[in-house]
Length: 475
Image (cartoon, rainbow, N blue to C red; front, side, top):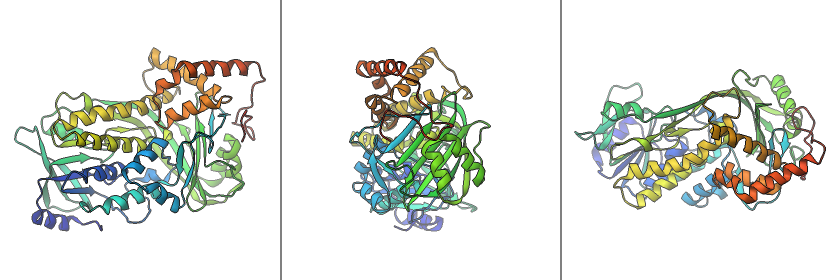
């Protein structure tokens, strides 16, 4: 369905008042998936966005980060397919590639490549614009979903005692007319810059506690033409940072016969944005990253991005929260992007919203935020724990954090030789398993068994600074 402008929305609201209208603030992936869920329960779902919502696969001005490497984790793929059956086939038809979570990914940690083996778990390699474009078209084609762009939501409408949200107040960007749009439910999917904490305070409610971890990640991305000689057998190549070498590299196969290559660093270690310097930085990573950057033709110049901090708003801890209001996606929690968790966590939250709505709308916010918190805990603990293993990242390092990071360092080293340990780690990284699963007796025994075997052998070559990592697995 074509999107409407502000004047059309004003006319629509007068002609079709609806007490069973749900409003979603933001046409992000999180907002679209929330709208998909709400469309099964409400008479009308209205998506509101400042930016356009194009029909084609295109990066939006409102989301510049989508031009960089994005990964849809295995759990995210499973959930979005369940919400929108057949969408995986759509992505493949548009040039995406389904690959094995374990055997199609060359994963390097500390310069050592994980041992590989088939896992039977599917993962998707495709660009963010294709992912979001397909979801957007599917959701906007639903009978009761409408969208209005070029608008700015200014605040919430509430009952006299502010115990219930009854709608929103909005205006056209650059315009003077204000519209008060009634709604039975308002869902904030406006991202990490959400104004919801301030809106709550203006109504006499408490703002949520906010946690921040200053990571100061800077990265640069280039698109390259792909050839069969580049990283044969792999759809994804990942080089994760550690304290000794806190540099990041990610290369993912894309539609149209391309690679997207993102290089990153912490603080002042910003990757260069000129072709020659970018290639030189990629060469320093070694392995497939270096070989591809040197051999492939670049499609355009590298582009940069900066991510200052991860943040989490603890709505589930508020003693009082108005009915008829929720938040989802980055409006609740925004993660360090190097772990690729954002899309998948948003999908899991949308699934949780569907399950909470199925149990009724009484106490919806309390139940949803608790469910969302448990989903976020897994991703947050994994990402923040890894970030705090880097000395330049600011944050409190408890004794438990230091212990877990020391153990995870051993897991990553053991994964170089043991594909079972490697798979266990990847399942946590892809949100298929909880972090404590890495401390099950069977995995602990394999970790220390692999470390013992490694001590009996010559030290392996590490990736950085060499042509290719030595590995106990096939390449």
